[in-house]
Amino acid sequence: MFAIITSKELSHRINHSFEKGAVFMKFKLRNGVEIPAIGLGTWKVPNDREVVDAVATALEIGYRHIDTAAAYGNEEGVGKGIRLSGIPREEIFVTTKLWNTDQGYESTEKAFYASLERLGLDYVDLYLIHWPKPLSAESWRKMEELYEAGKIRAIGVSNFHQHHLEDLFKTCKIKPMVNQIELHPRLQQNKLKEYCDQQGIVVTAWSPFMQGQVFQIEELKQLSQKIGKPISAIVSRWLIQRGIVSIPKSVKPERIRENFSVFDFELSPEDMALIASLDRNYRTGADPDNFNF
Ligand code: NDP
Image (cartoon, rainbow, N blue to C red; front, side, top):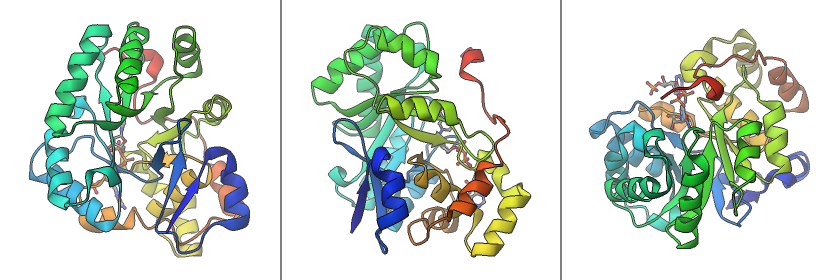
């Protein structure tokens, strides 16, 4: 049983009628495409047995969403993992991203088809501009065409501040459906999340576990003890209850499983408030305004 929840409906649904026993949840994008609320991150996972096994294991456990990028160098292994799992392609939501040096109208098309070839797929579910760059408007124009041609089910951006989105809005025909940004208990991005909500853009949280640092936060250790759930599940649950997609990365089967165990409990308003109090505007990665790759 799936609970399909849009960002706007979410607080209502969570407060009043969260479906007990739901196996997993999805959010609805503006064009009706559904994005599973939990995905497997694959940054820094080598393009060998490691990524193949991580992807196949995640899909066996129940994940239906895999996040990769041309820049991770592991699209080939991700594709192999998908095929190894035996799960039908149409059940899986695959995201990949356009790298900075490939931005531009013609080069976006070339980069996109190269990604498809490495993945061994004939479409992707979500294609993102990885970082905002001066050529993003041109890249976006090509992405709109690929979307309209049915090669991509949804298009979006990553690491876009509000001002980057506003710039894109000046020239785009189709607004981004997703913004994938760094977001976790120490960087809650409330203003940008609110702006994305207003624009009908679903937010995905990258580095939801702060690349491992989240497990050191004392208040989360105490909350974990109090409610008897691992910090990993608490953090993803907190994101999902805010209408945010979580894409934690692990290559360890027991952690991949633990990171998916977020659908059999709810955080109370008090628990949510406690996590809200942990915001420190602290980044583990680059600020998109000062990223020069
Ligand atoms: P995460 O915040 O997901 O943290 C991953 C780290 O936490 C790894 O060291 C992992 O180790 C460890 N870990 C995972 N689960 C557990 C657990 N249950 N208990 C203890 N440790 C755990 O980091 P990422 O930076 O990888 O972010 C997630 C994904 O977001 C990326 O993989 C990528 O797909 C995406 N991303 C996108 C970016 C963008 O610019 N759009 C930028 C950065 C990331 P181990 O593997 O050994 O378990």
